[in-house]
Length: 206
Image (cartoon, rainbow, N blue to C red; front, side, top):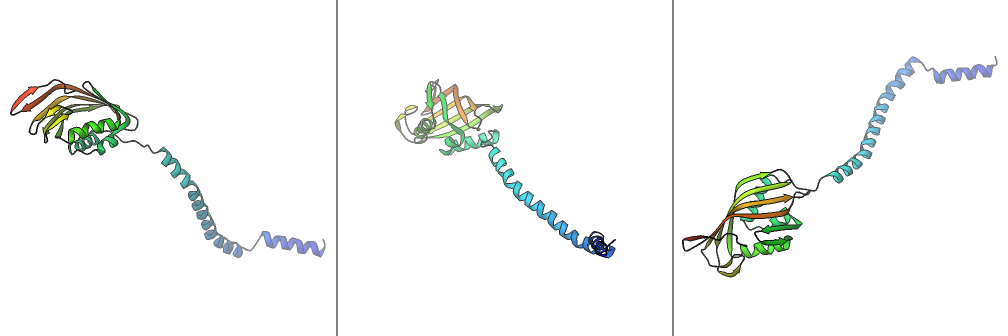
């Protein structure tokens, strides 16, 4: 074997089989480096995945409200304080409300109806019974109206300050996929008018 071949083999041996001391030294040096690289890869992987996951979650987040007993009580409370925000908060744009023989289509028509009531009366709603299966909701309702201002063309006709009207009936609500009412039907059990202490039954108001 030539001297150059011996030198080559020695060089390969030195490169591939370092001393035990060198092995331990290099191994100890590589451990923190390896941990750092691993953590770096983990950080890069998380950073790359998180935005995609967040985007998917945001896209899948439902844009509806849950109509339950508590939220319905809030709806009634908004009516009792004459809050017109109740219409946009709880009504679908294409809502149809049937009150006796009167039919109102859409939020603007319903808002105008209640504007006429609230401008001359104080309305107090009291839910007697409540039931719901998620898509449909039904209540037994008693509502007391107190006339606070004379009017010749209120939704109840000609009225005078101090008169009282009392509604007792059943109201049915249908709920859409976004948690809003799209169909309301108002049925009458009784509707009375009290003038100067005398109460008379009126049947249906509309």
